[in-house]
Length: 432
Image (cartoon, rainbow, N blue to C red; front, top):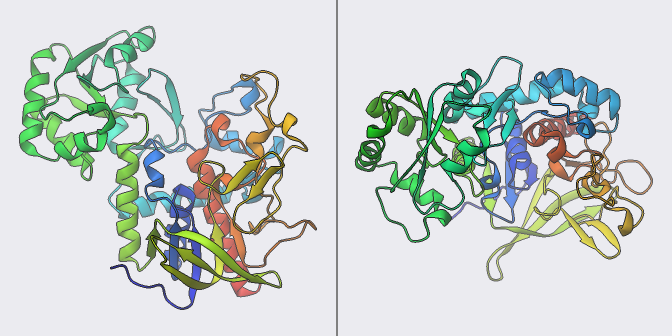
């Protein structure tokens, strides 16, 4: 049975995605007592593994950025209301550094090239720009960069990953690329729907030995082998190292469609580390209401299965509930609304202006920048243009004036705005 929350916490973080998780991580490293509440368990399963900071800017010109910091500086100058502009380059840098250090302490090692972005091939053969990638994917970065002779392996029955299709798309960029399909050593009904089961199976040394045996005859002239990101559910680095020893070549994972095994690894490792630090995690708990008065939020009431509910009190609240998919924003015929506090949402004046005439319009769609406006402490603004609540802060994709999908900045936005929200709370508590 999970422990009951303390009667008075420093912070309650609402949201189980990357922004909410990062906020809990950064808060606990500052000695704060924290509870994290999430309606949907497994929010990080939609994270593919690589962490992007800023890959494209301006998005209208599709300008790919090798130097994300140069790109962020350009974004701040061109989009002064973007959350990165509220933070500034130095704060984004500190936030990313702290988060990566926390991940490392939790057993998750990310790799990169100093202060630059790297390029990684995805399961569909497209190229993705990222700031850091899990160590299990790193050899894929170097193999692509040096165009090394590489074998891409998939598993019979796996519908969301095709080695042959990936090789076909990448052939002009990566000539010495080959495809191989093998039968996975363990039979699962509907293998394409159970990637986590494949990862669980590969925790077994016996299963890895059988997989290596199936691949070994096809390694003539091959220096690297890439496989879908299912190489272990908990110990991905150990599974990769073991397969490298068995096959005598470099092994790397390739990002797949969600639910993502690297995302599950991230969630599992982070939540274990948070619990060890005393963070109370309440997954599958929906926030029923917030108790507010005179621009302060004293606490929230959360509910779960059946009639279970509990009131939790805290000095501050961080709202990291996401946009539409996460449930932070709700769209109706009358417009877009914020789900918990009824905060005003920056949005186009009418529904017919949400989208442009062409789906692929290079300017993007105005609705993609809908969200909450904030002050310099990351407090959402009310109708009068000042903060709505003195002790409520917001982080992640719920924030307005940003289109993280088109700028390839999802992880950077989540982590850096979580940092901004935590720092905003500390300033509030200190009275500064």
